Amino acid sequence: MHLPPQIPPSDMGQLSGQDHGPDKEPVATDDFTDDFGVEPPLWEQWAARNAELPGGERLQKVLARIGWGSRRVCEDLIAAGRVTVNGEVAVLGRRVDPDRDLVEVDGGPVGVKPGLVHYLINKPFGVVTTAKDPQGRPTVMDVVPAEPRVFPVGRLDRDTGGLLILTNDGELANRLMHPRHGVDKEYLVEVEQGTVAPGGLRQLREGILLEDGLTAPAKVSQPDPGVLRITIHEGRNRQVRRMCEAIGHPVRRLVRTRIGPISDRNLAPGAWRELTLEERNQLIAAVGLASRAGSQNGSSASEVAVVSDSSDSDHGYDRAP
Ligand code: URA
Image (cartoon, rainbow, N blue to C red):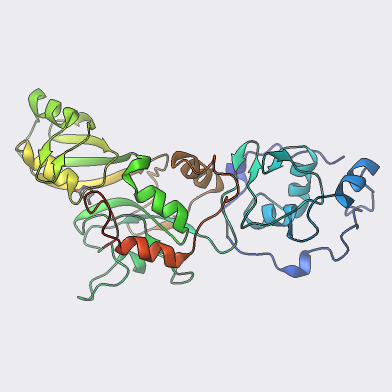
């Protein structure tokens, strides 16, 4: 029996999202001898031979590809009973269809499929959130690798800095951009006119009537005079700027510091990194994808593009232009 790794997923390294290649996949389906020539117990061999799916991809290969460690480590995870497929504890040798099966490790969904990437960037001021700018200004696409092609999840104004996710994971992007899922976004805001009086803070907290309707209650604190920390879950066009302007304190400087569970104080302006597996799973849970059996993964990059162009959002919400 293999011992389970005692390393939390977050420490298992960054994800490349790349396949390790077919050369590492054992050819024979019933070759269960490990690297030291030791055979696993008979019950494991029996279970593997009787694994439900004749086709599909080996579970340990799928897990290894998305960053849970080497094949051996992933086999240990499975052997330890920590992996379920569609709610049932997986046996060694189980094959899965990454497009259809819901794979979970320690009860957390493994919501990725080959080729999906999720980048976190710290958008510098002056950079446009668009896939292509007709005026030739620098865009967020210049910050991340050109391939595979990704799209910004939502939008930050040109003169707003801070955290932005770019991905080709259509399903996750759609959910993150939809106000129904209410993922919090936190902003650090420097306003004009100095200290905001208690009445202004109360207005922000209770909701402000803008031209496109009443804003949902915001979480607001004032860590320093004239500096606000504002958390909203809507994503209306220039919402924070308009809210602050409405209380007589136009925004001087605006930075997004958190998207749902994702924050990173160490990511410098203009830098990017891939989300860790733990962060991806947290995001997937935050938008309610975890409970959706039968489709653990995403839709295609083209679907992201379609939705980004859509005008059916409530207020032209936080969408890529
Ligand atoms: N609110 C704004 O006003 N601008 C942004 O870029 C993001 C939120």
